[in-house]
Image (tube, rainbow, N blue to C red; front, side):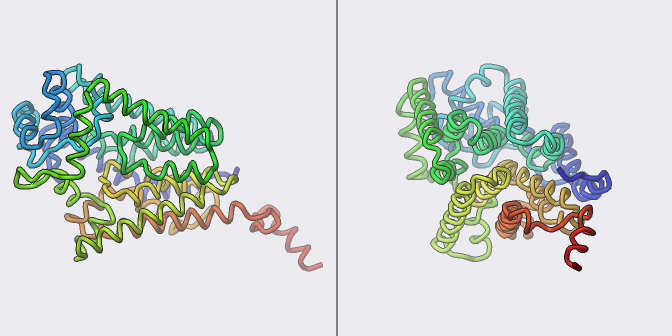
Length: 417
């Protein structure tokens, strides 16, 4: 392993740590009643978690039929959490499949604050465990520190979202595929609670010809769906399907459509640049196909495990038809892997700019507020291209590799003779 010097790490720290601390400063400001004092307004800590909690309490109260009714959910959230929120949530809605509601039910037995903290701690612990198994010991500490400081992490805490769990399942599923294929498949199957982040999983499994993992993924996804149907009832699934296929416009703004206006997807960026809805959808479909193609390519290469993990993580984010800042944690991990490789190669500080920028992408978004965020899909595809290039270099025969400084003199002597 190439030694990574403290000087190199110091350069990277100067480029990233201030932004990471700024993200956590926003968490502190928001949590102490100073929402928006040093950044965007987030309303309150856990503004998304209160939606999940209200949906869960509706189930416990025998009102599961109202969970997917935005007109019912909005006033109940704003009433139940009037002391928690700094202002009423405008268009909250529960758009996750019932499988996610099943997963949050155990936490929602507790009071709101305890449930919010418990969910974050449990899912973050799972993420660290996945990183520990999927990443080598040489870079484990580096990756964990990058995750702790990552703006996507602080944003996930701000929202009270499931970004830690999503990332843990992706890292565990993609990273452990060669070592423990059945367990990896189970993890990827559980990701079905967030479909927009899961659709590249079967592509990877098919490309790797991991039939046991694919079967395990299908079974675990089906078990999760059936368990939610058994606990919540089949009507919950019918209501969710109806909401997705036929969004309700009973209120001034449909929650699903409102959420897409504020995300960082290719669709949203194209729309903000003036594209019509058909054109924006076509560009989003193109990004999805490109993500699937590069993921398929990466998982056909059995000798590039580290790179195929990073490529799959980045491709998942750029291909997702709906992606929020807290969903960018897999992207930050991909950037951290590229940064580590640059450090190992003793690359120039300029080579660290791309992974550093994608790492702090949540601070450059949403594009509706921060115009530079319109370049987010371009930056992600740039990261993927850099990872693909280094994957080729890593796969090159030893006699084609660039000589290191230690043997450069002997190589030069051979050339002279």
